[in-house]
Length: 181
Ligand SMILES: [Zn+2]
Image 1: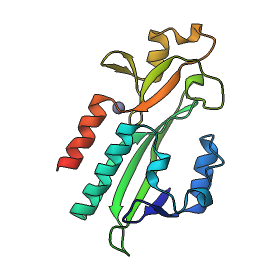
Image 2 (image 1 turned 45 degrees about the vertical axis):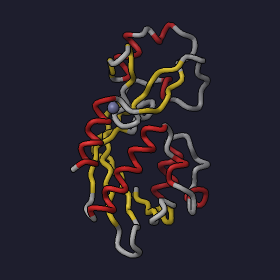
Image 3 (image 1 turned 60 degrees about the vertical axis):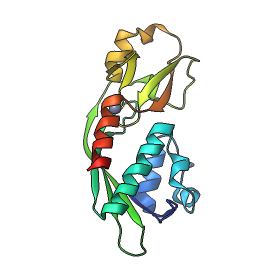
């Protein structure tokens, strides 16, 4: 899946079919290509830290005129999805950036309600890392969702907690390393 942003980080192009398919698969079928064009990329990134870091990575790609590659996870309730993001200075107008995400590997998992945005969640909040998809179980201790569900006995609750989108310290460190090189 690939999309382009201009020098002001406005989405100016997205591949129609893969984008729409991806949105549908992630329970966001209303997020079609026509609904995202000419809008700021940051309107579609949840979480202040993630937004800020994406901004830094894009500036870095522009300043260095070199592509940046970063692994990330984009899990669904039924699969762990290992992805790779490429942020490349595009041809064409100065400042244009092409962002491509591709699936490296997909592992099926037993269905996790906590990742299902279409069902009700409780008032409880759990810190979720947007990059590695781990959650903070105790202060400073991050785990894969399955392990967290067990450790926190979440199956005993009628509703899964809400996930707040942020970044764990190790992903933040990795990304900042990229920005600083
Ligand atoms: Zn992380």
